[in-house]
Length: 177
Image (cartoon, rainbow, N blue to C red):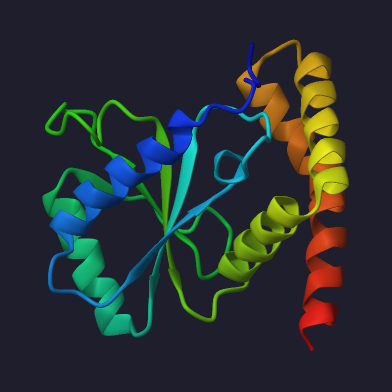
């Protein structure tokens, strides 16, 4: 199955990844957030931990980028989303943690709209059971429509789930003001 029931070990996986990443970024200015579906207790998800590293200045980004590259990541650009840089593993098996726990790693400036979207949606789902259940049902439906194919699921999610996500994020932005 593409979508798995919530697993409490996703929190431990995030903590393990955070510790390893923190070692690579020792002495730098940053924050690390667990975002995405695996960060929402009770929400079924693809078992991939999404992580946002948050920085303040361009100089901080360059230092973070250098630290990540030294620990086996490569910079894969923003993949079409401004102010959200993607880092991927080189796949050389240099870290028992970083190379075995499936994760997506993003690096965002503190004022990033992508970061704001991640945090607002995560926090809303954490505090709103009906929205969490609705989103979960949508994810299961899309996985079924996709025939459990990851690529097809990603395309369907982009088309169909983003409207759900954006409606919640927009309401949260208005609520914050």
